[in-house]
Image 1: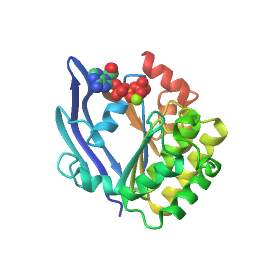
Image 2 (image 1 turned 180 degrees about the vertical axis):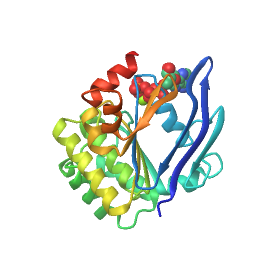
Image 3 (image 1 turned 90 degrees about the vertical axis):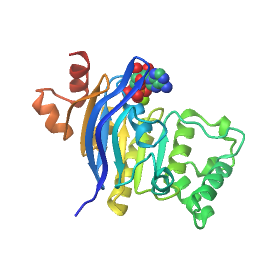
Length: 241
Ligand SMILES: Nc1ncnc2c1ncn2[C@@H]1O[C@H](COP(=O)(O)OP(=O)(O)OP(=O)(O)O)[C@@H](O)[C@H]1O
Ligand SMILES: [Mg+2]
């Protein structure tokens, strides 16, 4: 039987007068890939930062495999990881040096072998000795994905991981994530504005608007339910309504 990976109840996060996450409740099962969708400013990144324990909720509760990010952040981080199309890494180190630093932090066994395998899977092995600050946006995104997979996470938070990737590489990243899920039972919480990637990856989507969940379900079922032709059309309809 699958475990509950994430359980969120009545979660709220205020930044002054802005309610970025507004009484949000949901469950993610182990091995599920759940995509959070919504317009710019809907609250997706704030939600991921709350799940990672980077932000403290104004109210509500979060359980990650039964643990609270407030009291068990270290333990949660030992089996989870995070990547985003917008994070950076120390820019004066080479790609390999950066990944070696994280390998040490994560206590990865045989780090050289693991790093090379990930670099090959993301097709950036030729960049291993390049200074990170000189990488293109898509190369940096792929390096961040390598970092996020170093500790063989059980739970992966991905905030727009395919932003800045060309369609061919984005497709390969989706394939890699689906293979990992099949092989290791990985759970993924994901955000993207690329509906093609969302359709390919997500078992379920949760649509947010102004901090609230407005609908959720299996992508193609929601598209049908709202009498739309595609996820992209559904997105536009829900955002503009
Ligand atoms: N540290 C902060 N201080 C003040 N307001 C914030 C802060 N972080 C986020 N916000 C606000 O909270 C709301 C939600 O922002 P968030 O970054 O979660 O949106 P998002 O759904 O990830 O959007 P995008 O698709 O553009 O990435 C926005 O109105 C944003 O301006
Ligand atoms: Mg965001």
